[in-house]
Image (cartoon, rainbow, N blue to C red):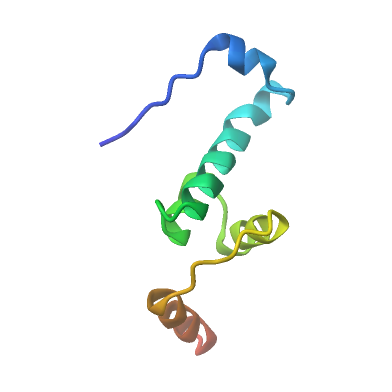
Length: 84
């Protein structure tokens, strides 16, 4: 299933960003908001934002959004730390 979001043309024109950055920035904003509300996991939010783990984590830090750190994230970090 794929979802498409329709944003009125007048709203898109009002966004104060270069046209080539609008889609990417909107995806980041949506991803951060959904993560902060607990609607998306870290992994799915960063996928939506089209960012790597480090970049998305950094973005959350810049926004002072606390990470939802549970057993799954701990397990992933342990595996990463062991080089597996």
